[in-house]
Image (tube, rainbow, N blue to C red; front, side, top):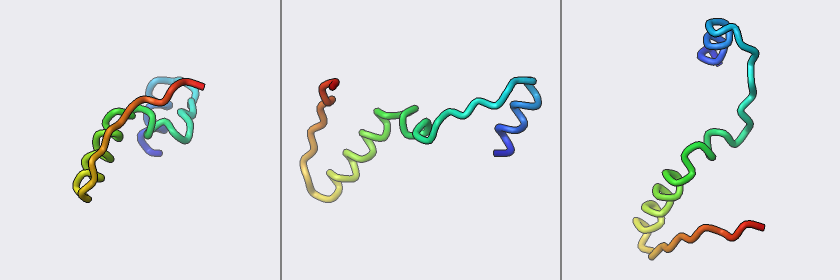
Length: 54
């Protein structure tokens, strides 16, 4: 929160909320790789395919 406040005051720009899922979405591929490694470490074989858009 302190970093966000600093940038708002330093840049003289209004605060923009990035959303509740911003952190998860910003590195989606990295999360998928990490979860894949964790599941494989449990002894499972993992295959990931992108879901079709609805």
